[in-house]
Image (cartoon, rainbow over all chains, first blue to last red; front, side, top):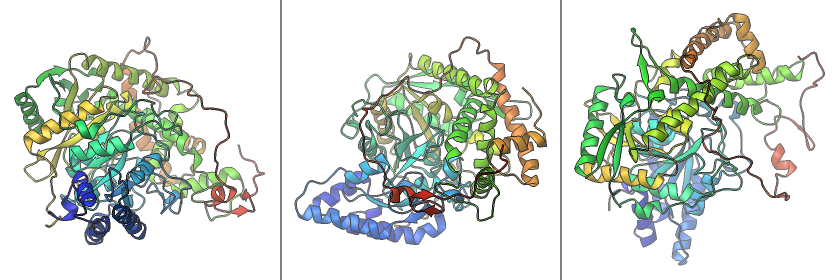
Length: 502
Length: 100
């Protein structure tokens, strides 16, 4: 048998059920890996070693007692630190929640535990999930296991780095504008943002409520299918979760999609795209053709990327997304007031407004402040129509483009990110440059669609290249199967960074 | 549109946002907010006169729950993260002042 930490979720669960490996052994193997490698990666905000070992022992006890074991029995997982857990802290990588202990458990995590998963710990993120590199974390940046001078992407950078670095078998992230898919691409793993409303957001700390969605990050497509099936479903505690039956994704993931039509959105293959990524996507399209798929060109005009004479990029979708996300964030983050929970200033204040303003000034990082301020401005009297309402109208245009594209194809194939993982510090000076890292992922959230990123090989310099598959609402089954078709045919799967020794 | 963001406007937005700003931050944010807002102005290129705004990805409205008491947090749970508490109350500084 391979090393425990190299097994997939599906394989490890089988090994535990068959008694070939114990859940306790698996938990220990991962805790050892975390101790060895996490000092270099800083993927975890908190490791719940003792609790994880207890959970694992309970699984082993149940197996010995002949009890029925769940689909994730004994599998050590990690969850992004913006998912509330009544054990450990829930910090959102923000100083304002540095010591926050949530009184309840997020539904998605509850479902993992009910399925027998062992929760190893909470992973790092850009503060309140606002960022594309995990450099905005109030607890320090996470590093990319493929090259520790580079970022893991963000905001679910801790989860993606932990999965790629074999510090957990798989993980949960959240995706508001690409925060699962882009770090998955940067770290060479598979990340899936399901349809808006497919997974309950109960217990996910809110950022942009009309955009946020929880999803899995795993080392292969089959693991992603299994985790999606476990966490999906209606939850009365989230009124935006959809009462619609969850497909048996894991049982069907190996079935090829018949008469598959792959759409290539013309606007996403412009000069803004790195040449190596473009070439990898061209090869992926060839793989699909060789499997009998029809490849057609489609158009998403309102998601197009324009470059001016100086080479500065702009996009309606990026502008639209940031207005909507910032407006929602400014409202959602109003709850951090220093009165009920979270950081309160130690200085003496003369009134309640000063208590709020100073506590928030001390607790929030720069990017969070920028977004709250811009969102507040966009919603303020006199500017609401020009920014927020305008953005909501453009959002409709973006969605209409997708509806039109899906008239002629089943799944879109496009890049996840315009570049491979960039260096730490490379984009921190100018917030706008960082926002453009999301140029291919944000439209999906605006339209509420499911989108998956999977590895499409490595660059010449040895960095993972991600490709993105996008489908109509509730096409989880088709997207996962389409991803699996490529994975099987190309053999590009379970990529392993050099720092992870055998 | 194309409105210049001056220092006073940054201070005003800070006030609306309930975030105290240092003068250094006012300078930095003035520059950053100006360039981001200029970027947002790109949307004005589009004619959206006849477009229905889309606030939400899914067309769901008014999801009603049953009017039934459920479980809620105990006072101890609710107050567990309070910066200061006084019995079953959140304690805050005296709030009577000249706040606007």
